[in-house]
Image (cartoon, rainbow, N blue to C red; front, side, top):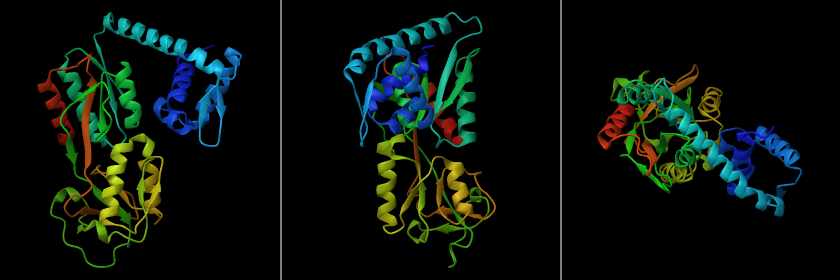
Length: 303
């Protein structure tokens, strides 16, 4: 059976021309994306893409079918919106959260969204910034919290909120004394450290394609303070934390509760790598008044 997911895979691959990037846009990993493409090609009875060493390109059949796939996705979304508008249980707010949003902050934002529209149902999706902006543009999400900076083609955005970050290092990485932590929020009292002193192991980073502009800013700042440290790409924060516990990576996180045995937490002097977050929504479908957006942005910090 031809499904909505097959159409999403087809359109994402046509636009991204790369399996990894398309998988992030759709919100799945690469193996099921490849399986979905094979199934779609079997269903339509034609090869849709030519695979090369650097990516994929549409075949003649793929180019001919692409407009139909886009129209079908638009019709599905219109059907979904019509169903939501007539739902007797009340309106649905579809909220997207980037993985970098700390869990407590995400929960606070979801609660604030529900309070902003009494009787509404809030559903939450977690996906990379590049995927969230695409889903907001298409109307599949009402609004989303994404990393800043990012491309806002056809989207409006709220104010940028900076969340402080901490460095989680393998235990014993820093042998010289550090200054005492300036706030109790650090948690274990390991202290304050200059980013440039965190050497010896690479800093864990997520794939650039998830949020290219924000990731470039992070890497540029990291290189300026720590030119010889290096980085290692991880799939998510759990993998990064496991590498830190194993002595193989440093994690920069905005989550004040993240930790594990064998990992030490340090406040970064001057907060050079804050997590920059903001709400985005479709310019043609503003979900709330701007004062409500400001309240939701405040919830990021309260959380």
